[in-house]
Image (cartoon, rainbow, N blue to C red; front, side, top):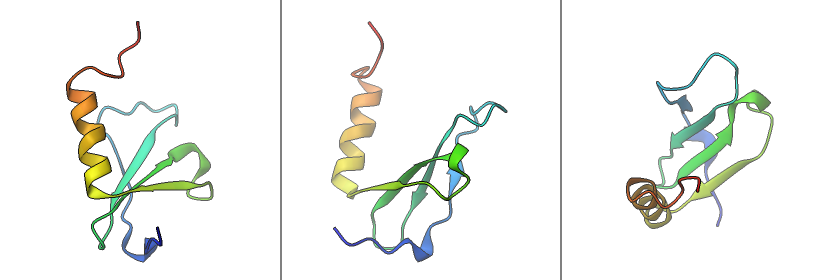
Length: 69
């Protein structure tokens, strides 16, 4: 998938702590969603998800699919 990162406006969760170990999300102009690690200060890799993939992830979070055992 070719991603247009030029419209990315990265944001962290309001639940993020001051230690810098956070995930940032950007909703891109082409409908995709970008995710990156904030501690890399924008220099590290970013992942891109289609709207359907992002919706499936959010559903999994809501359903408790990713909770630790």
